Amino acid sequence: MQAPYIQLKEIRLSFDKDQKDTIRRFSLDIKEGEFISIVGKSGCGKTSLLQMVAGMQKPTTGLITIGGHEVKEPVDELSYVFQKPILLEWKTILENVLLPLQLKRKLTETDTNKAKEMLNRVGLGDAIHKFPYECSGGMQSRVAIVRALLDKPRILLMDEPFSALDSFTRDQLHIQLNELIDTYKPTVLFVTHDLQEAFFLSGRIILLGGEPGRILKEYPVPFPRPRQKSILYDQSFYNFQQDMNERLQS
Image (tube, rainbow, N blue to C red):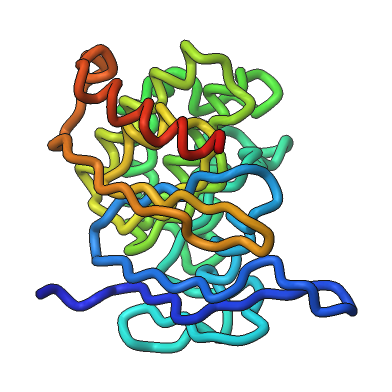
């Protein structure tokens, strides 16, 4: 059996002075290369879990490990895509994509060519010299994804990156994200409120709920990758989605 790559063991997280827990007794094993979605209502601790895996905050008690090493500080082998793209307005699309690499080391011609290739792959080849204010929300989201994947991170954390987009743009980005994930094969932890989004992208879905937050149920998604949008109209796919939706509403 493959050993877990990321482990969260008996995680508890408390913020207020009364020590009221936001998350309690949360344990999860994640294998390398898995795509896991965390679904749940607002306030159940989804974003907090991502931030703890990233080393951006520490659990009150419990242990988080990546590759057998405890997470005590921000993790280098990891990229984070936030709810908003967070692009620098005075830099071009290409410069925004290259910025994280530029902060680490001197850029090479290979870096620039790779960034251009990836931007072209998501339909932004003609926009590399534009500034963020000249781009739509969907275009900015693609920039954020390319930027996160450019350095081939082993772990990709995504916190509702498509929540502000219209359904047509979101559908396009789902297909493009799937293609990029299948190419670069990072381990992905994806937070969303959108069940259909979770079903289409994930290999496993974690339903989070309660106060404090805890795992209500885990759903392996029994549909092979790569996935096409036609699967959304498959009856078995619909039944799977409906079962989880009913549990979430209850």
